[in-house]
Length: 88
Picture 1 (spheres, helix red, strand yellow):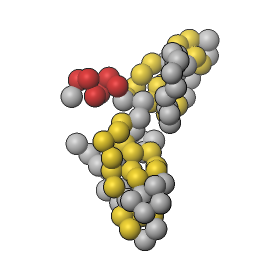
Picture 2 (tube, rainbow, N blue to C red; picture 1 turned 90 degrees about the horizontal axis):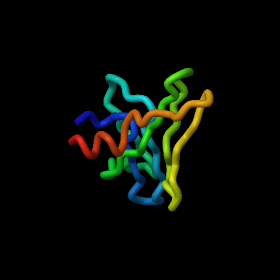
Picture 3 (cartoon, rainbow, N blue to C red; picture 1 turned 90 degrees about the vertical axis):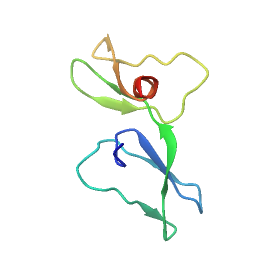
Picture 4 (cartoon, rainbow, N blue to C red; picture 1 turned 180 degrees about the vertical axis):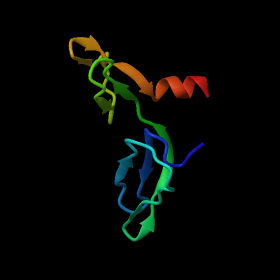
C-alpha cells in the first residue's frame, strides 16, 4: 500500500493535528509537525467525485445521518474510502 494514497490520514503524536491526502503522487510523503514525523493512522477518508464536472470532496467527519452528496444535479460517486476498505 502506498504511503501517500488519497484518503490517507496522518496525525501528530504531540499536538493531535491531522492531515488528509487529497491527491496521491509518485513521491514519498513524510509530514512533520511539532518537529516530529507525523504517523499514518488506520483511517481512510471517503472521497466522492461528481460524474459530470469531476469535482472531488473528502468527508472529514461523518455524522449520524445519511450523507449523499449531490453536484450538477446528480449523485456523486464514491471514489475511495469505504469501498476500498471492503474490497481490501
